[in-house]
Image 1 (spheres, rainbow, N blue to C red):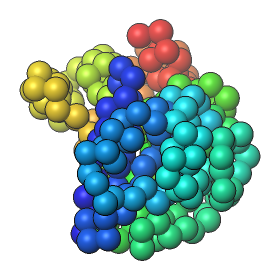
Image 2: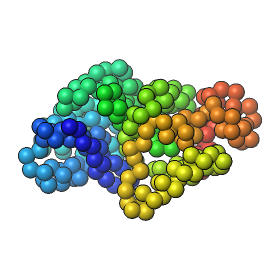
Image 3: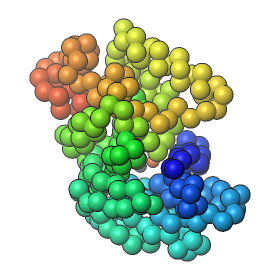
Image 4: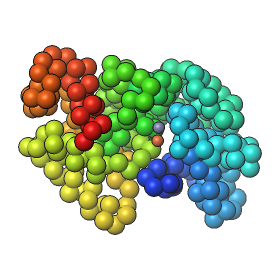
Length: 257
Ligand code: ZN
Ligand code: FE
């Protein structure tokens, strides 16, 4: 059986720890800091870290990789086109890897960074989206274009509704505040805001999310909705002529929100 837990790091990062409880093997996604993983291993004698999955080169995602590799000898996977410390296996779009007996597909999802990849596990319905798709939001465009990010998000949108979305940051409340500004009358967003506030008040992560919920509440996946297009045209007349145009205006608006 696979169990997945969030190990909090820094102020709002989550390192996702996948655990094979039968074999006592575990894998971690985007260990920006080694300390929470080493503390977990110390608290769980007999467990072995076998794999490290990296989505992109930012330090809050790779800062702990070299140390963890050195201490545990885990296999390090990361995007082929980015500089990833201690990487063993360089991954391109549509690569397939096996991690603790689970087959994972690699999606190239440029936008936040140019080489950013995501990991999708189809049989359990798991997506590790890094800083590309967030709960109710998406990553900033540090390296890529709006068209690239829009295309990357479209690939996630095509996944089954029940797919769980494990993103790398707890940004949900601020993302939902923006979503409410875009769609003040969207009841799903209002409900999600209430749910997320209740979780955060108890210091519980609001993630994983799922694709169905994102389609109902994430403005960056709702560029074809009439209400979203109208709002975009108020700010940027004519921008709603294409999905990319809507996305571009929303992303620029959110950057200053
Ligand atoms: Zn990042
Ligand atoms: Fe990040």
